[in-house]
Image (cartoon, rainbow over all chains, first blue to last red; front, side):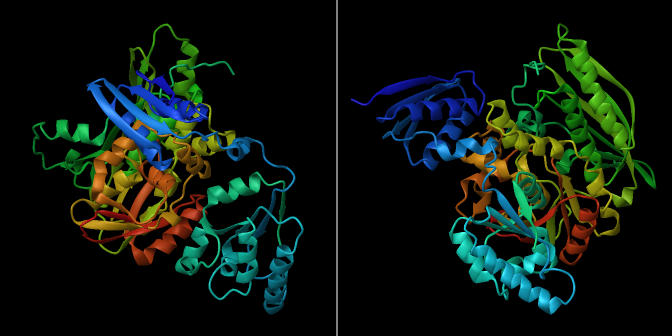
Length: 204
Length: 340
């Protein structure tokens, strides 16, 4: 007989019904059924949306205009995702961020600068402890896009968990928006956030 | 910090009445025709515009809501920034503002002082003057402004004036609704709340000041009805839009909180309202939530000719506005909005 837990979320505004239900589901480590009582249809829809995303069986019933019951079944094993918890505590050890703001490395001859940049990215990929994030902005956007000599090195680092992020405004500016070959597009807020939370930032 | 405001029940624009409910009521109200009322609520625009002289019109708007942050001073700033935004979305210049206050009699009046202080500072930053107000005793705190601005009747930015081929620029990151919701259940990081507050207290004045040299076809501010909701209003019945979700700016943590199902009722109401008019061509639950997320004091959504887009982006950057080109207006398809 599956264990049934009742969650009373009558009078609660979103997201409280979902938060309570999620907690109840996580506590059913051996599996079971959570019945959440809510007083509005929007809460029913938000609960259903969560169940669908978590691939859990879900049904709902209207008792009256101000009372609905949502039933969600879990097989258990829904412990809170541990790795998401320490978001607020920046990892001081390995949070190296590399900021690439140009197609070339250093001032002087551009041809040489390009060769140096290719060498820099390669050497980066050979580091014992890889950077957490590599940011590309302004002229740096040419390094993650079609025609770059460094794509293979970058892809190899991405495969090892390095976040490769290129400034979307810069891609737009250089007409490279549909030519991105590696990593994801980012924005100024994320760039500032990433730089601010880095333990160390290096620039080629 | 003591819990100074304990009534923060999910305020800001998440407290708006749903668009469907509103439409039902407003549809039944008799309209009076006045040729000088250039913009009324026929086009669900941001503010009303009334012509008083051939070369002068006034822009009027009103906005208030319950707190979405615990700090009264910040709440005042956010509420005012949000109210002033409608003037900028029309292309107007802020002149005067009146306070709208609901406040429980038994609360510490210093709290009210801080709220109004925050609001007043924003009115001054906008170049306007605070000219009075009205307050009533109420069970919950609510604050906002009624703002009057001026505009040239030929230089109004309608919110539904976009044309086929226009590019769409968004001038603030999305996700402040989700972040504030996460904050209510103590699940938001400090950095996320900081980003949200920074965004909510930034006047759209700076973005609007860049628009004068461009052929702006349409402009609106993104608030409670979400990016997709306001985009839908912008498109009207004539056009569709193609949105590139990879270009949409958002507060990074909003994605994580959406994945943790810290969802608002308002976002779901927005989703219900637009229903199958939106087609998502990508599998990205969190991004869908971000696009339906009600924004408090959100950025401007601007439609202008494709060839002018990059230049405007450059000007915005110079004003420290980190906008993004997020999509384009297309001919009408069976789906009003396609998100890829």
